[in-house]
Length: 70
Image 1 (cartoon, one colour):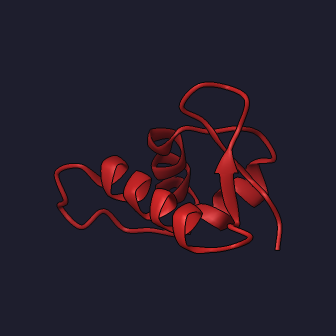
Image 2 (cartoon, helix red, strand yellow):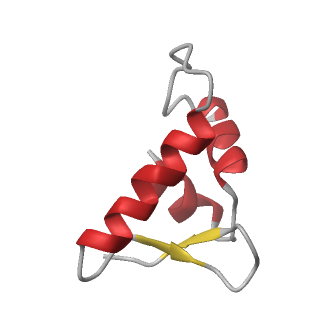
């Protein structure tokens, strides 16, 4: 979901913005989670730690991420 949002947006976004876009684009339905932004941040962080070529990376802007491609 976050990969698709960042790919479509073509601009750096923070996790809150990614969640908002995902809801707008109907890529994600809110599940009642109290902190979806933190959950998404954790998933992005895990992918960056475990994959040699992660799909989402930090941008030069503080707290924002960009789509790195495949």
